[in-house]
Amino acid sequence: MKPIIAIVLALAMAANALAMLAEPVWWYGAVPGVAAAGPFNLHFIRDIGMAYLVVAGGVAWFVWRPAQGWAALVAAAAFLALHGLIHVADAIASPLCGQNLLRDLPGVFLPALVAVWLALNPKPGDA
Image (cartoon, rainbow, N blue to C red):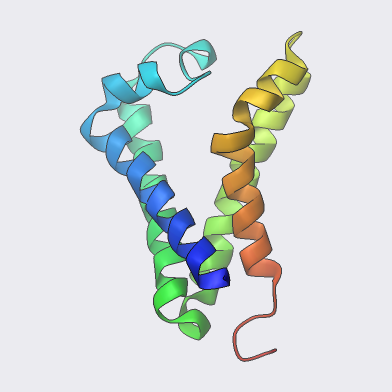
């Protein structure tokens, strides 16, 4: 089950990255909450798209070679978790805190929680 969850996570992060890189204007308008975070910035969206591509690659490496790719999974999980903490801080500072947290649950918090869960399970070879 763990490899299937990791594959789904890698594919979701790759899809997000490719959308950000190939269709940044569409991505900006399509993802809930993005436009509310600030004006369209092509360079910034592509920067973050590349970060998501690295996350997808790290998770995919873990799927392909769990023992060798575990450190890449940890780095991917760290990025996703820290990104999630930024969203928590922004939500706390907003009068729409609860709405923002619910809005960000599927696209920000769930991937972070899954990645951290995958990384915190015993390292392959240690179990």
